[in-house]
Length: 160
Image (cartoon, rainbow, N blue to C red):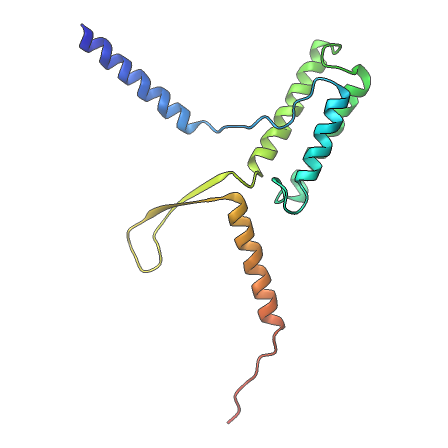
């Protein structure tokens, strides 16, 4: 009887671990209870979207989406002042706007780990390579700069 209970516990534990691995973690970045807190959060997020910031690689499209959501949240805080004073529909809208912004920012986080299963050059044995989103973006940027600089250098042809 104890063995059967133990096996069920192991099976449930394994299922929970698998579900935990599959689920994506969304960091809570945007959360405010009143207008002043919200203003501070928006300023901090915009600061982190600048070069060198945590969200520096956020695309123009994602920045526009974040600003649209911020605008909707700002109108709610302008109207009500605090979350406690909002009606239920406004609280739901605020929550959904916050979740949308948090999802965009989590996806664009420089610390987000991205893993690929690739075969290294000269090998048929694939391996898993993981880098942060920031490392990937910096490598792409550096490669583009290198190519642009290489194209600007005059190429000399050897004459014969």
